[in-house]
Image (tube, rainbow, N blue to C red; front, side, top):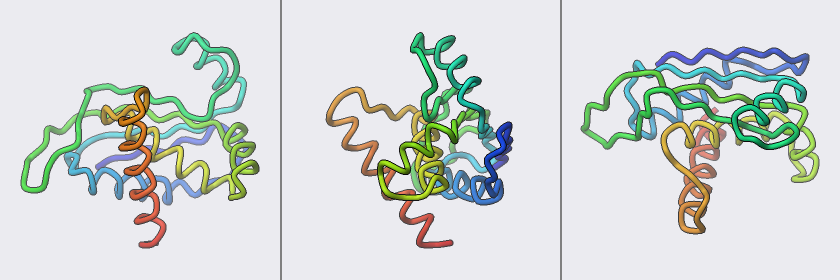
Length: 150
């Protein structure tokens, strides 16, 4: 699996940790090992522009996902299709405020948002209560197992 992490902000992150998290999530969900993923950290202004342009929403948001080849999770013993998963765009400024409100670090919030964004790329959604329950439970499980392994 190829994960490219680009940070266009002054916020310092360990790109290897984010790539390892992506690898963990995609391995656990049986996504083809040659799938490609991009993680991009942008300023609040850049995120506000993306949010307005693509979601028709004002202001910056925490995470946006831009799927490419509409890859989906596989199953144990299956050979999933390779392809380009897409882009996860994160905004550290918004994540920092959310982290402060939740009582944890900005990097923990960014890791959570990364898992959230990858799940969206894989077709998960939280528009309906049952979908939200499933997605958020999976998101929590994937993040906790990653953190326990590191």
